[in-house]
Image (tube, rainbow, N blue to C red; front, side):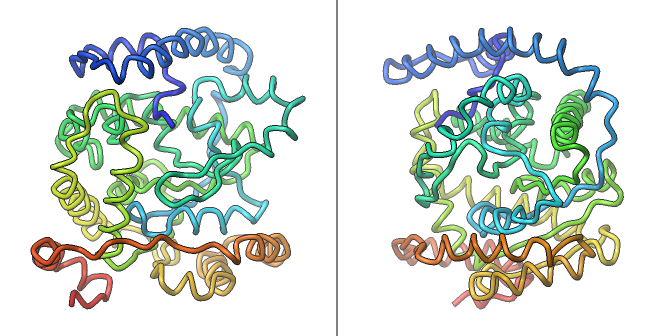
Length: 362
């Protein structure tokens, strides 16, 4: 799993310079692979713009539905449940990994679609099966296109503090924000054109810190926020870092700093969300606890459709029922207990979030 599969050669050179990379031998094979891909991606980007550019550039993006929530809070589960409604479109794993070229690649892949649907891999942090058309985080595609995203730190973890400012863009140069915004608009236009103007359901945890930005871009957008016991989020995010970074990094991950990074970024994301969520118009936001969604998936998806006035729940219900049967045997990960000193630190530094989301920090 690599976070930069769809990067162009020109952007690869920018990242190389920006991060002052000196490759250790263990990362040389991965770096060489990305360099080879980047040359192909650069050529593919030119061809895609020539073939499709005039078709998607003037597209109007319907108001999206944004799924918000920190990593490991159930956002993927919720996203997968919501996209069983065919009235909506979403960014899939192929599209987020190849945002410059997915229109061209999908056209060429049509003859092999049935074979591709049988291929999958398991996500290292939770063993969920992922296929080329599985729902993905749109920020991954935007990161590849803009180079201005916290997602880039999955490849360059020693520069994590530099990329962390792109959670909110508060301390980022205006030109960096414009670069990210233009990438987002372009990516959403391509998806909208690809799916015949269906509204998009989008899920990226970093969007949780960007409510005001998203409302400025899409005043009629709707939001679903899923939250989870902060202790469980910490345990699962720690596993995410330990399992994913070794597969995506081109630098030695700072494993001794993982706890600090998780604690800091959680605070950044939720300080922004709690400060901005009241900007969302009435009837455009619903919040739900992960634990309740697990107990009654069908009931909550119906409630979300009803409270946000989303279309076609009745038509989507049979497909949703079929999907729920297919995952009935899935079991969540078990995690090691949090160390006593660290638990006390979380209880102190995350106190406002335990209170805001109604969890007892015992």
